[in-house]
Length: 162
Image (cartoon, rainbow, N blue to C red):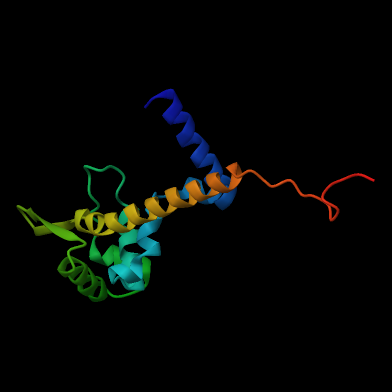
């Protein structure tokens, strides 16, 4: 990590500590794309779907190490039954947003599933692109407003002094 990137990351953490408090941040935090929250309805996600995705994201620390909490653990955190989690994850998989990767275990059948979000990422990218274009257009409009030459106001008599 370069010194500039490290400084920016530290500034981001400090900014979040000012918002949420150091105690909450020290207990753990996760980065999550706000566009998924903003476009959840357009994506066809229910509130429970978003909660599941958010919970899974708290277990996804590195790009190459996908999250793998058990359905029971997710259910306990969200206050629902493991069956509810199983149904919603199956629905997310059917929509193409989540891919379950089974992990067979030599002695006890299967380990917990690994969850891949590549489908959700791909489905959300057009919304992200649209938002970036809107932001760029808003920046250009702001820049144009600031660069306009303001007309000099003249008095009723045409600006002539008496």
